[in-house]
Length: 177
Image (tube, rainbow, N blue to C red; front, top):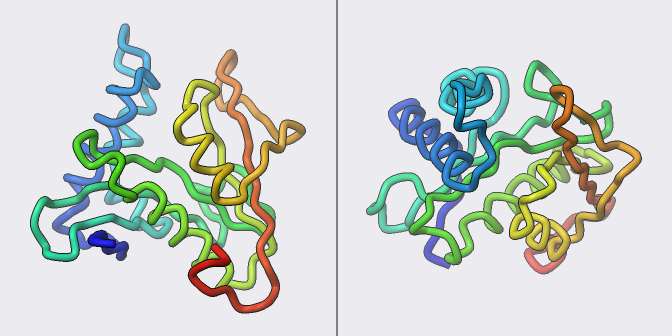
């Protein structure tokens, strides 16, 4: 694979934030009428990096800038919406439009699963809007299952679907993630 997943560098925070907000906007996941308050949160990658782990997908050769990003929450904090003590979660997965289909999203999810496993977590959880069908297929292909009993509403009228993946207790290899 020609994609590298690593922790975002401070010089990449603005790009990662803009990419995340643009991906959500382009996919119709933000309110276009008024300034959606979530848009500011999506743009603020520096804050996410301060309180969670901000990962980026980049070309191994170094060209092309940030291809995708995700916020990994392994130890609670202000970006933990769902995770209990033995769980990790990830949020705000986004891939630049022209980079979609290259495996960046999958690589970011796999990196989150591996980090959770290394932390000794029992499960990885995530929230997703109902219309994110492509993401749902990715999650299911990587072993996540719908967990409707944990669905929730961050704001009235917006139900987020929860997916969870149990983690093996034995060391994983590339093919196990």
